[in-house]
Image (cartoon, rainbow, N blue to C red; front, side, top):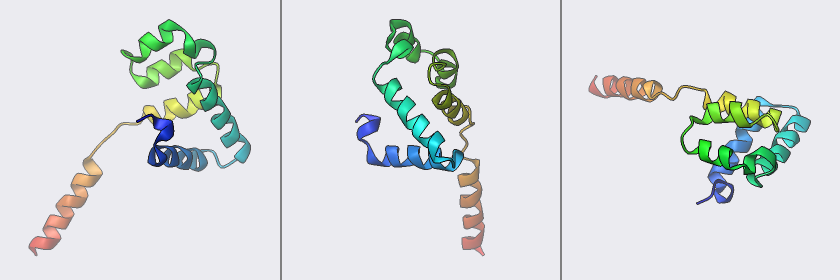
Length: 102
């Protein structure tokens, strides 16, 4: 399923946009730039950009190819550069186990 047809994914995307960019004008700019990205506008349609997308880490890809959409590039790099961790979930499960065992 394509991201743009997945309601849950798109709601999460716009939730993050609204949270990180409270100004509606910035939100519209990022949305407009997302359309450029999806339509393979400019550099996004080049074979090198498409080939690099299959091998390059996503945040590095955006740094290399996202200059045409600077606000979307900043957003993407910001999100994709975050470290994913399950430590919070593990801590919660551990605490829940302690509570249940008492």
